[in-house]
Amino acid sequence: MVKIGVLGLQGAVEEHRQRLRDAGAEPVTVKRPEDLEGIRGLILPGGESTTIGKLMRQYDLLDPVRELARSGTPVFGTCAGMILLAKEIEGEEEAHIGLMDIRVARNSFGRQKDSFETDLTFKGIEGGPFRAVFIRAPHVAAAGPGVEVLSKFQDRIVAVRQGNLLATAFHPELTEDLRIHRYFLEMVQP
Amino acid sequence: MIEVGTSRVKRGMAEMQKGGVIMDVVNAEQAKIAEQAGAVAVMALERVPADIRAAGGVARMADPRVIEEVMKAVSIPVMAKARIGHYVEAKVLEALGVDYIDESEVLTPADDKFHINKKEFTVPFVCGARDLGEALRRIAEGASMIRTKGEAGTGNIVEAVKHMRTMMAQIRKVQNMSEDELVFEAKNLGCPYELLLEVKKLGRLPVVNFAAGGVATPADAALMMHLGADGVFVGSGIFKSENPEKYARAIVEATTHYTDYGRIAELSKGLGAPMKGIELSTLAEHERLAVRGW
Image (cartoon, rainbow over all chains, first blue to last red; front, side):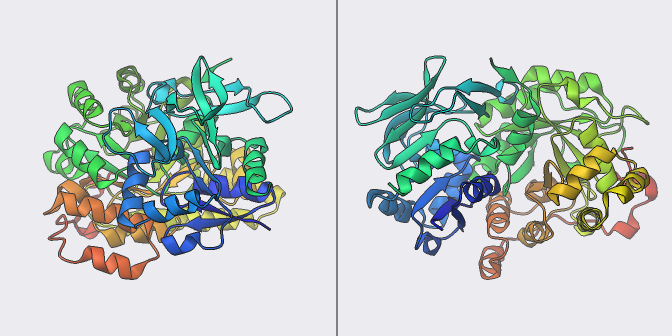
């Protein structure tokens, strides 16, 4: 079984682990740099991006994750994970992992009472719309030329891919639909 | 079609807080310290529980100005407390745009028999519980997140430990019961059979379950994680300590790495004095907050 890391510092770690198991992969919780050894892909879960970013710095995880991604290992960020991957975060001076050519706006759909679920079309997955859960979600305000837009909601970019990097503004780990996790696993095992 | 306030959206919000620390703050400055330290959310209050306890009298929802000040100061979610059964305080908090409402025993109850019908709200609720029956009653009313009650404002972890252990033991018991025994157990616990059946299937509560009420040190936070909490609320423990910045950071780290005892030893060094704390046996029955809630 292919081993996929789930960054386990904070957030919806267990939900991603369950979806990976359901999709036939073996989840590995990553809390320290040495946990990255032997994984074929890495998921950055939803949570609070400021918290996860700080903890990644405190535990020297930023550089090892950057190296892993630069070496071609697929990395998938959901919600906070998308913010971690972005090269630019609106209103903030510093990026976190900062590998994806996207500028993200945080909490761009409003506060929790405005959080919502809706049906989305997602380029590259078949079988009808995907039920997407947006929780205090970001969106991609600008994407570089190498970035493929996979999904939009009300003219806002909410899912992108750039080579081995994948990011969604919503939470595929909160629904039982495995198609986006399977899409990621296909990036891992071409 | 867009749907807001669904159970998936409300419970999902709590899932995103897991493994994190939610800190009580009383102004913008404290909120920024909490955010800087890595808190996943802040609870905006007029007074922390230790001060509510000291002040006595009737404790009510905070001044909306305090809540707005905190909401402007940070980008992380902001929670606020409404009195048990006070539908209008909760509606006011929802109108202010807070991200989560705590229907809390720390405030003086407004209703001595019933809690708020939380299903009527778009904003999610967290509620305190001492045992499985109480947790499932709150979930039946629409709570999207549960926390132990512990004994707020005491800096004494013993009640939070008791409530978490009680809940976990009851869940294990339910898992080993046959379905026909569950009907009677639901009657014993005073909760809906359907929710108990869900607990049996999941082996846990159907919503996120945090620890609260008495966390004062990094080791306290790690202990609650060890006992199965999904995350930790810290009320008075941070801003009643000698060095709030250090305590806040150390409690966040200890919660993330709760099994890394060497690291907890390191980050516990030279923190300065924690909040003073109260021995539970010195509290009179009417001074106990955890007994509020029905």
